[in-house]
Image (cartoon, rainbow, N blue to C red):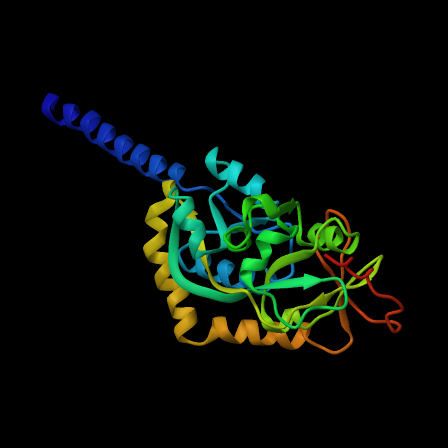
Length: 276
């Protein structure tokens, strides 16, 4: 009898230890994965749907937080955000504590905007001779603009407004060719776009290094979506929604570009650039 009674406490201790180990493992996984997008919302709706599906495939729920790029960087460093929705490849080289999920999500291009009349072409070398506004933290644009020429803004809208008021000579933005076809209106009038893009970038999802174990499963989940064509179909459907002749973007201070159908013909244009 004494031998049997001594086994029961040992079994109970083993069971408690196993339960505690399971609770510890669960505690290491966040209840909801916080994914930073961007205060600029123009091309994030399809990405959010795709990422939500990929994370669901590995048993995780997500919450998207639309922050300015510098705040996202700070929140990543302090561990208050788990992942970034989409970033260009160069971002991961500059931010080694964020692991790239190596499945392409979207191809984007850097386009330059100006006040009318727009030049037919713009060489990258010319950016060092003028003032160029762009969204602060946009690596694809920063790689093209010499530091002395940079006029950083909180959002692409603010960069467009810097251009429209004459504070900058050009504004750079990262977008798709079909989104670039949508006119951008400001209070000073409509901006013009230089047709040829300055650079091309591929966007990838990224997770904080503390969640490096997610990289493989996410690559498998997103890779399956790409192989099936679901990623490509999501962007094609979004293109059909956005790229209609009546749609226009409105640039407003501190906000994402607002997509609105044109209710009347545009009655003005941003002031012309002074001769240099």
